[in-house]
Image 1: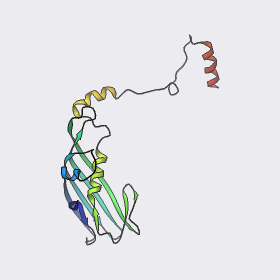
Image 2: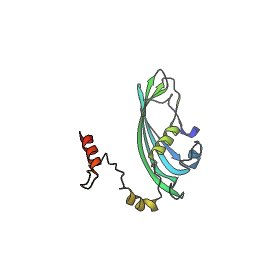
Image 3: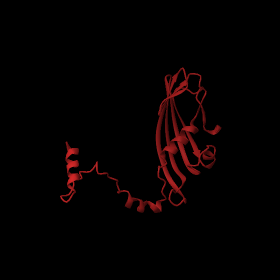
Image 4: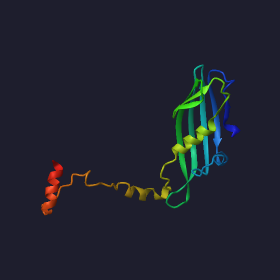
Length: 171
């Protein structure tokens, strides 16, 4: 989307601030089904200097998600803060999840992809409608435990053959 492209080539070395509205049109431009709709504001601070560009992204608003349990849509609040550093180098490549190398001739930055990824990272793995949150806490404390992990001891009425095997296991 052209709206989310920032021309960095002619920018002066200083702090630049941008604000973008993120909505249904934005999410429909990506081939995905995680987020259908949303109303978010993305505030981006680009701090350009001779050796790198620092991008500070703040995203706030709500997205519409589908509950994994009931398939009902609900609004989920998003408040995300991320930083990305664009270093100048010979190749365009991602060095780390928050460090990207760009060439000196890079004309533009498409911040739309970064906004989309940051919103996607803020969405919970388990999408649960707020009306089911109370029920979810009841089952949240259930933990599987195997005998190897616990301090399980055989009771005195255990078959003597098993007792011998258990003694061998301890040695």
